[in-house]
Image 1 (cartoon, rainbow, N blue to C red):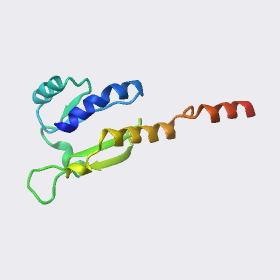
Image 2 (image 1 turned 180 degrees about the vertical axis):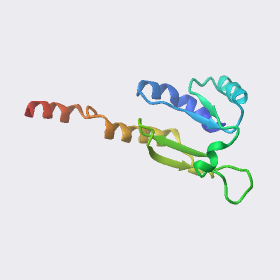
Image 3 (image 1 turned 180 degrees about the horizontal axis):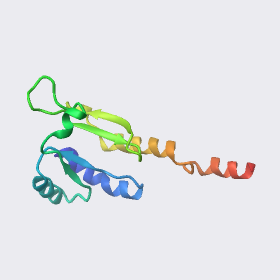
Image 4 (image 1 turned 90 degrees about the horizontal axis):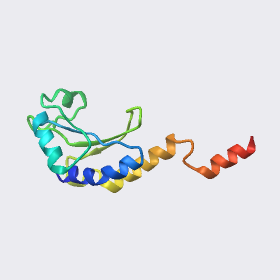
Length: 126
């Protein structure tokens, strides 16, 4: 819950930076909708109530029955995984600053116009 509040605060920055947040929960769509409304979040909270993707993503906790390992996935625009944060323990979870730094690194990598000075130099060399 605390992490979703932080994501809600980060959401406005993400919109400005052409980034998106999506959360996935094992709760029903109805519970997720109520949670989303209660948080005032605009990002979707998808439901995996049948836990169909837990095993596929190897998120089922091996030492306990039925529990899952909470994770934060940071993805490239093509949905390739950039980084995974293991949220099993609180300190393993991504902070908003971690996510800002990851989004910055991805943007620097994929945007040709990230550095306007090098772009201008490239144009002048032509």
